Image (tube, rainbow, N blue to C red; front, top):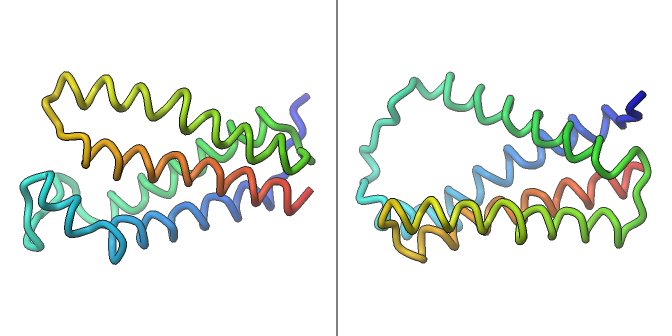
Amino acid sequence: MLQINWIAVIASTVAAFIFGGLWYGPLFSKPWMREMGVGRDFKPRVARPVLFGMAITLNFVAAVVFAAFVGPAPSLPAALGTGSAIGLAWVAPSMLIAYLFAGRCLTLVAIDAGFVVVQFILFGAILFGSG
């Protein structure tokens, strides 16, 4: 049976959601919007409550799977190394492939993939700190 630290998963979910608000808000909103070709008046295809609900849900799913992968009390090198490896070696290259075929620029790849890399490192830090 999987041992999952549910408190750390919930903390990781909330932290990633808040971090996403900072990443795509004050840190990178201007270059992200420029590269996406949208302005401040941009309206997502789904209502904001649904969008935020999906973001929290998907952060939760990612945090649960990450927690199952590293175990309930990973060492600091294992937690941060796993987060880095997932972000840099699995997710970012997959995003780069998709973005290259979609004709997106490398700036957009760096912003979006950078978020995911830091997100998984954050998961690792929280899981280590709560173990």
